[in-house]
Length: 262
Image (cartoon, rainbow, N blue to C red):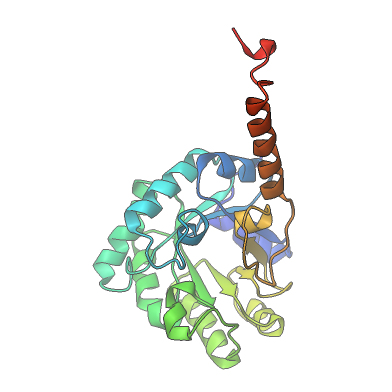
């Protein structure tokens, strides 16, 4: 039987130099498969706005939608550490509202932690949520909820700011930090400087772990594929091929055959 992953497990993995494998998931069947495959962290990302809902950004995703998808994922997971992603405007206004929304992920959806975007600017929020007994994963570098402020999805290269952000979110109580869209040499320095695990996406090899969007990893997405993505399967092509065969057999009256009838 596999061991349940906890915050303590992740700390120990960093200490031992063992890499952390993380993926996003948005529903029960994919969460169950990721869990059975040995993924350590499953993030129910607000990326569902683009991946599942067909939005052009993560900004339209609501708290209720995040709670719904996190609940589905939690039902499919036995061993992985489940993190719920706090959507745009669920934590940026009032600290009391941020704590309440974070609590919903644990109380209603079965998550074990939450993630929020930002560095120095969200440290008070991290402190407040952590003080309520809720583990917080920070997210610095390219932060998709700030896409308009950043002028697009751009690699972040301000080393001094990135290191300061990393130090400050650790001091505020974050148990981990996602490094997105950061040059490899900078993410390496950050990983060496702070004591909490770093999880990279487009941040090079030297982070304590890596995360990919599940649909990118499995070849289910079409259109623009970021440079940092590697397809580990081509399920999209397989699905289209299978469905096409189904359509042809229905049209040719080959399905259902006798063995598929009562």
